[in-house]
Length: 299
Figure 1 (spheres, rainbow, N blue to C red):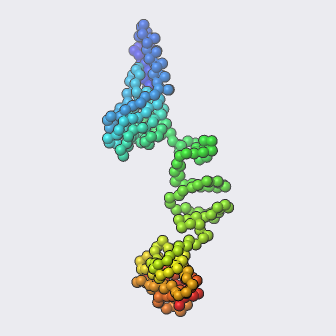
Figure 2: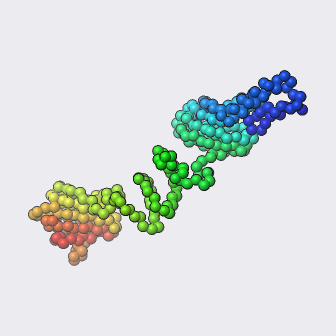
Figure 3: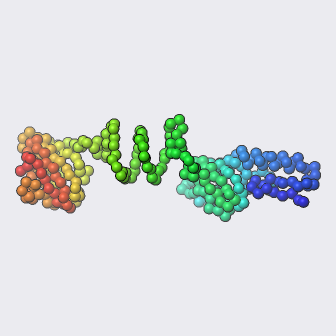
């Protein structure tokens, strides 16, 4: 019977009576193929948009290496393929220059894995397709086990949904979207802080000339020592407030309307108001360009 070839890394399977006087050479090549399959490394320079790795019968070839490092500059979305029917584990390191293009590792007929630039992937081929062995694929692994290496992590963790059921200590957390809590959010040390500062403090800004209120003044105290305050139209929405402190010892601070209605909470009249020395007035937006003003030293 003639020699045959193994399915996955293409050893030469020698049959009785074949290869007289060359058994040793073929066996040595098979051992080299085995070494390549379990520990071999190759740096593969990608020069085309469809690169095919060789898995040659009975010979060393680049597609048999355990570790493949991809280099080169991509000029378009690119695929690197291995033949169908190959069952093998690979470690892939993508160091290509991407220029916005993608790099996919796949069997000829499969969809494969799109590699992440400058990252290392462990993948396996089942003879039909290539699958990434990622952290999300691993069973019985906690988040702490994944990120803990001596208790530290230097990378970034992206989590789509995170449920915490026990006490958790976090030195710093940055969230770019909303946080929804079904129960209380409690802090036992430090302050609760938003974009305007510590949440138990009312941010205070000092002004010494005429000043027109801005959207960013919502939730603040404007301490004014000289000039007038103008309440503009088209800036505030219902529920927003600004507090004015007249930081003066004599005279008044004028609080003037500009295209808005401003009712005095005392009698409901709509007019400009004067705020006397050391007085405090709160302006509440109740509808589009409609406000209510209240304070103990208004006139």
